[in-house]
Length: 181
Image (cartoon, rainbow, N blue to C red; front, side):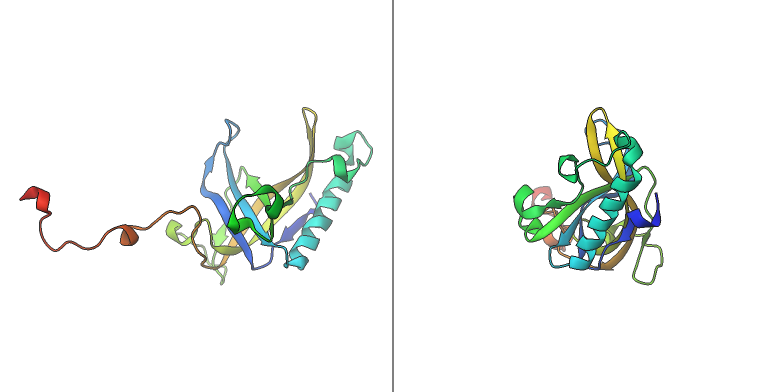
């Protein structure tokens, strides 16, 4: 991989399906760290950088495509349209891509200090993410995939997935519950 295939997203990128603390197996495959990145369509700088990195990955991967540059339209590409492919308001007016790695990402705050508290990092927060693109040709599937690099938390966001906290679910009880009486 070259510097042409690696980018860092803008600060309005939102994380979803953030499996970034422990690797997980998806559909019985190899365990990986992974995340879905939701990128607003108005973040044209990030979208342009992603498209340039995808083009560079295709050029660098010509050897995987039999020595010929394939038509981009026939390749499986990582950048997808949330308005078309997702029935989820969180993906509206956004593109998304899935990034994964067998190596754990470093997760840092705005000051590039490591984040150790897992509650600080969740699906729904905003971050800058380093990602790299590479060509693949496996069992007739040809395209460009996205590798996960490191993550810098920028700011909190509404948690995705509908998970509530204990404070949301319960109120304090001052004495013994009624069922023990």
